[in-house]
Image (cartoon, rainbow, N blue to C red; front, side, top):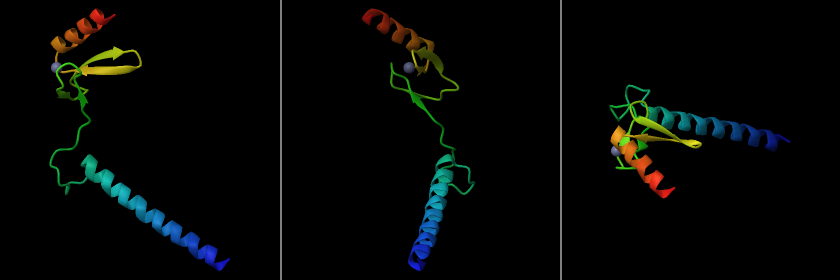
Length: 89
Ligand SMILES: [Zn+2]
């Protein structure tokens, strides 16, 4: 029984250490800490399926495609995508 309790304590300690490590990685990746190595906070970016440019969803031109959403760098790319899809259909 004592061994079981010791094992349980060990698991809790290891688990807490693991989550502290995960928190550290997440903080580093999101740039919440001012001492982060990357000066810019990492922004989630999406790829323009037409020209391959990476765009920030908030500033991109969005097109709903069924369940998912597509993002384009410009209206021209969106139009090209729609024209391509129209030709396939
Ligand atoms: Zn584009």
